[in-house]
Length: 510
Ligand code: ATP
Ligand code: MG
Image (cartoon, rainbow, N blue to C red; front, side, top):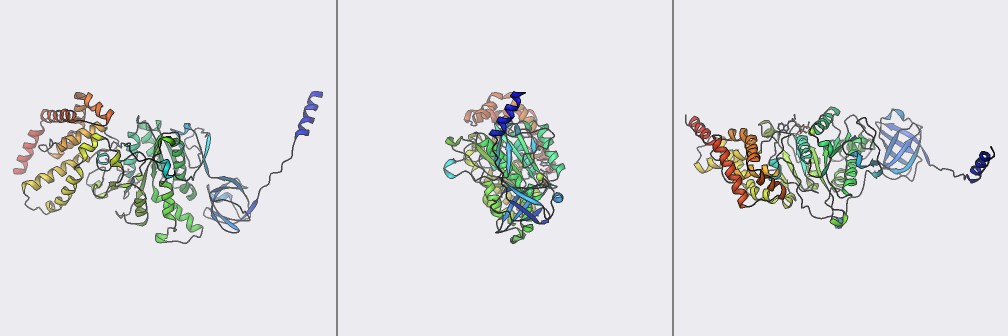
């Protein structure tokens, strides 16, 4: 008994009273997720604000006596006169290695029904790495899509925009790229912004089914979430990517899509009474995306050597890439993959317009094998496009032009690739070797397109050592080239490619 009272006495003696001092403010206005608060000075931009109902908001407008707060959840719990206090912390996302394979919201709350706990808190907004901590992009990020890897190659640490109208296969290219990173040591982040929850669920299912969730996690703010959450999502996803980059990992982030992000920001800005500019976007909408994409980087060896590759997606209206947001993002990124709905509807899928697509840094990171076989493709395609205009008039064409058109058609046929069916480097090299050596000249395009899967299987079965050597080293010499073209020729002759062509010729003669 004495022991206990002694113990309590000691506790009372050692108790030191430290009053907690908070600065309170009062809500003076609530409208569509934006709250005006008076009397809460000394706040910083992006700070979390706590309402007495338990709701949370983020400071987005700082005035002399007033602050504008955007609510992170629905606004039905906040009313005029409510008491508010600053938390002293800016918006953060909890992170740990356990996030891989998970689906979380922009503030790190799990959305897949399992508990998730982060070990480190990282602010959603962070400054981009400075110049001296970076190095040039020198490692390829293979998408497994032959049209992209050969014409618009992407390097680890690059920012490549995917731009196109609605339903042109933008998400598919990004998701296929994520799936193709299996076993390549790249951690992937898919950040869904302002999309329908059902569309996001489909993407997550595709990632799960293909086993890509083993190296991927998803940050979601769907169309039904508050604009503040949609605004925050890409920054949170980028912070999560930086968590892994700082450990020296290569990371790929897909922002799907930034047009919806810009719209969410426009909503917030208008509600915060900021002056509307072109297309009603606020004046700082360029900074919105430039500060995000500048965080993609390839770090120097001293800084761990990690990288963040960014694949932002932008949706255009009626193919208009010179609208405000598309031009902004095109000027920020290191190139773009432009998808065209006309090509898509003509069955050229992925609908990459090779004339308008560019990659400004990826060529330096392209594997030697791909560099060798893809050097002349751009010119061949440009000449094909130029000539195909004349062919449309049904003009009588000379044999040289006919051959040129035929080659262009073959190449376009080679670029048609089913979604979810990615190629390895050796397979892409083989397909393009056949083209550059003119082995397909005697084969009709339709037949070639049909036979590609069989041909690749034949190559994998018969010249496996050469194929795996290309995949391993990324290079190939004259001997390997010869082996590849011999095998392709063998396959075509065994499968009656040449006869098929003669029959096709007879048909046209008739
Ligand atoms: P949204 O504008 O709605 O976001 P999107 O541009 O992201 O659309 P996707 O959702 O990727 O387009 O693709 C649209 C449809 O086209 C999907 O049904 C998809 O299966 C199909 N598709 C995309 N790429 C290919 C392909 N290479 N081969 C066959 N079908 C494809
Ligand atoms: Mg999409």
